[in-house]
Image (cartoon, rainbow, N blue to C red; front, side):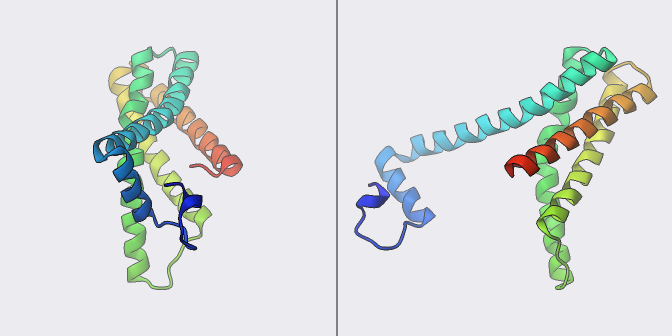
Length: 164
């Protein structure tokens, strides 16, 4: 039932909306739509980073398509699905242990970004060292350039759109 057609002054809660939608379309279709949305959003995020890695790797360092994409394919899921929740866990623990401890939104984002990009730099350098065949200095430089570009593009996206 559309929100405007309800006979209540208060808006629906998330749980009420979910139950109503589940009754109208059924649980399997609702879960399929949720999974599809997560897959599409993940693919979009990964493809932006992969495009950056592959372009910089191929243009600047002559890496193959698979090696350039592999760097993102290894690090991006870990950055999003492991490092972010790990940082949230650590931050929550610090806030509980030290009641006066708090970071603003910008500082929280920068600490997470620094940890994520450091992890990506080290992991991608290792990946390129094993698969790229450039020599450790050039591989580290390729990873540093790609991750600096990623950090700057992420910061620009965050400042201009509020996402991520």
